[in-house]
Image (tube, rainbow, N blue to C red; front, side):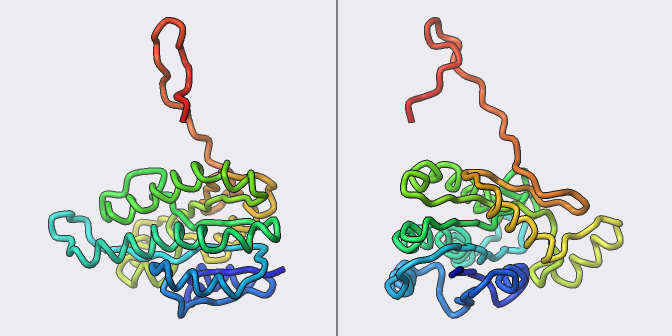
Length: 225
């Protein structure tokens, strides 16, 4: 099996890479650069698994104080790293009937006032993954996302870890995230957001449908999108 893991220089990406056969650590690849993705993908004939895991946080709760450059970096890594990656890797994935797993977050399913830009990028990843799944399925490629809770990684920081410990809130280990990735890969499903929480078996999030129209002749009809 040939697998690609971005963000594998640190956990949970490193833990994911350790569990996948022939994993390629592409820590030197600028995932925000579409040209770098195109150059990398040009050397691939087939790819069984792509774990798009690279991500950064702003560490700021104030949108008023957010520097423009930090905002652009967030979009480049968190959003571009997935969109550009899927686009560039699709031919190799299609050749292998491959699978994509995107590392999102519970912040992609709920609000996160202490870092709204990070949460916004993770909401994007969930929406993108669910919306692109039909196109990829038609080409024999599946795509799912994993949505971990709070993971004990360097992104959390010493103060952040201490705050969770003081509050008695359990943290996920990188290995917990690996189990979620493996559950998504082994599910045979696509377009699902797998929730990972301490002490729980990874499971797909059940999205509730939005209210439909109440116009006579079109009650509950979905838009033709």
